[in-house]
Image 1 (cartoon, rainbow, N blue to C red):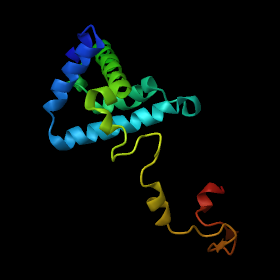
Image 2: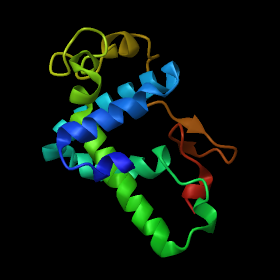
Image 3: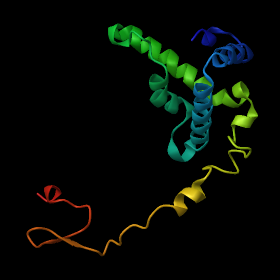
Image 4: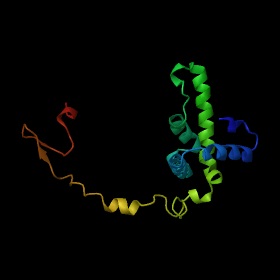
Length: 154
């Protein structure tokens, strides 16, 4: 959090690099991947309305929360949550500068070239969905669509 107190962007980045360097390798890789994904989402803010700020509001408190969160007064919790949101927004917006440009693609390709890496392989393995025209008979003899329940009919 003290990195946010720095005056210049370069000082903030240097302080955050120092903190990131102390993370275990697996945690650092996860952080890099998450921030890369969040930045990709924020690039589509025109259609998704999920700006870096909105994403930081949603994800930030789950990434960083004070250890004594349950005992903090509400006003202090609001202040800390605001700081966390600012920090996560900064991380989303500057993750390329923070970790290096190779993170943007996470596999040698740029984010623009492959918005969803491996999507083709994943969709090829998805089993086909049963046709909607197939009806099931309930215990009362009524015909109903797969996935529907009688509780939703009442």
